[in-house]
Length: 93
Image (tube, rainbow, N blue to C red):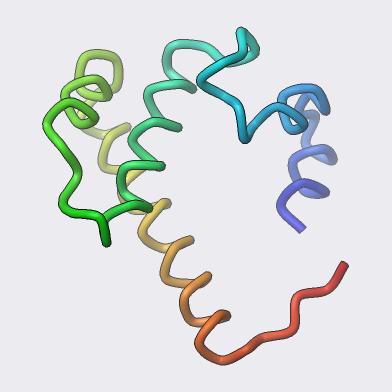
């Protein structure tokens, strides 16, 4: 669903294809990389709080408003995913 929406809005298919390896590619800007790193840290919160290294890396590039937006979006998406998993929501192809 999200891939389809991103493509419809003009996202580059190559960037979508390499998204799981965002840290090893040159397809993403410094801002993209900061947001992706922070998103992954937020998603791994069960491993512990967002570490200083991840937060500081994001804060060096993103504004306070951007950090807030990334935090809220990651939190909401993680909540939706956990509700879907808990309710055994069938995911379509």
